[in-house]
Image: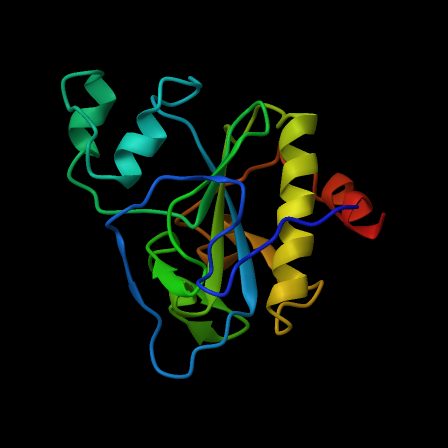
Length: 185
């Protein structure tokens, strides 16, 4: 399995970068030790259109879809998005805190944004993710684990795992076993 290259500023080389304004510095001595997998589609259950990118850059047009008026003022981001075709886009340096997890806890430690990397997959809880997404995700996870040694194999979870009852993504359609098999190759 080939790896993606992460430079010393926390950006992937040879990957599209769309810089989101929705980030800040990680607090003090926070070590990157968790990867959080999310699922997102805008509007819900629809793919393409660039609306996720617009949301992460505070440029979502409330009039483009009735659903958008409720979310267009949100200030959210993720470090990366993997689209249905496997295209990878980075929005925030891994060294910074992206605003993806919200109120959250992992292994008794609050505020997961402080020490995690958020990866959004374009999808929904109930529709299978694509093979291209799994392959790109496995490359990204392997590269992150190689770059940030505090991320171990048990430190990859879903948004639903760190915010149970509040979040459901990436949902039952996400095949964790398939991801783990790809990571073992």
